Length: 269
Length: 263
Image 1 (cartoon, one colour):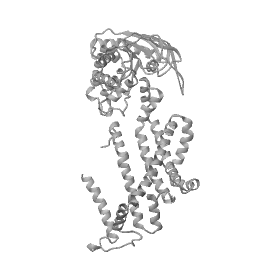
Image 2 (cartoon, helix red, strand yellow):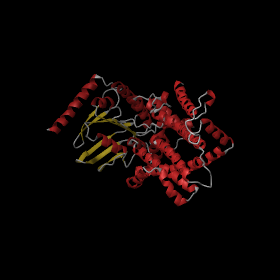
Image 3 (cartoon, rainbow over the protein chains, first blue to last red):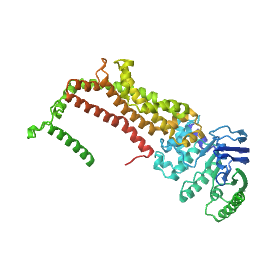
Image 4 (cartoon, rainbow over the protein chains, first blue to last red):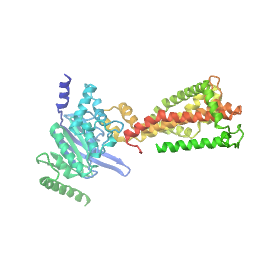
């Protein structure tokens, strides 16, 4: 009985469609008002892996925070399966640039944190689910390690397990690998694609690294700054699993990078 | 092991010097008595005093009385200080009012409350408790506030995205995240409570019980320096033991978890 429930919990992949409709967001700073997002509209399909790319100040992280429910748009709205987003929710989990793991809990305690807020599960089932996700990110051997004992890459793996464990429909990742060294990052590119293939979540991945975006995304959305706008979208049809050193991948990133340079050049004119 | 031996050797040497200068080592021909025993008694007299009064139950009883006052005052200080510190960290108006008050009163040695406490409460247990609470409360309040303010905001954001309500976040995220600060504040509060209780017991004689500090006071009144010095040793021992038994285990756990171990 329990086994069946557990199986359901783990092997049921909910996913959702995201719609961004005419979202505007201003930030008031000491030097005046900055338009972070200017009339941004975007649709992200169920199970799609979308990467937001752009220079700093283009509003890509702001849009991610709006989807997460951590910030509210000034006008326009973000919807999940047609329902407006009003605040954070268990259907969307966020992975931050810094790992944001809790140092007072051990690895499994961290993965359990989000699960504990999920009703209809017993503590024993939660523990089983947490173990499964640690296994999925290859961290099951470190279930009882302290956070400070882990390397940067291992910490982000645990953070990934923590955001996957409550089985959200959407995974939001805000430059999660930018603080890691190149070797670790490459390994995580493989892992995250593997997880996406297995779980088929809707993933929104924010990065300023074009190569990273092309390697991971089914679609790359290019943002331009001042004010933050969606400038262009590039579908990526390369076969998975993709290697970041692949030739075709490099070519595609090259053309996206030159598009990006075009905007920044015309901005400074 | 070597470090323990060095420490032990140092203290044994101190006692030998003390014994040598007060005539305790006359048996081996070192008959120097620099001071009268009314000024500095030899260690043997102090040892006898401590032994006799431990065996006849006087010191254990007064320890019990003192520790009871200390614990009650300290716990009241904690129960008030931690939530008030949390409020001061959360609301600016409480920080600007109560926080400033705490900062001011923190600078006031708690023995300064003794004259007022005597007038307000008379020679009663309440006067002693009041002084202990004044010693504990402000430092606990300030370190709790400081701890909460130092919690990286990303923790609360992460918790919110995982479905934590504001109250849940406060109890399960902000509070444990500030634990290292709160614990060091609790430790400081304990030290202040101990100091203020000793000061209060020296000044306030209460019929409801004869505490350690009162023994110190009457040692002076009765010209019994062996009693004064013996009680001083006990006060030191209690302070050290509390640190080792109460706080060391918690601190070492925190260090292990947070990875802030020095060795």
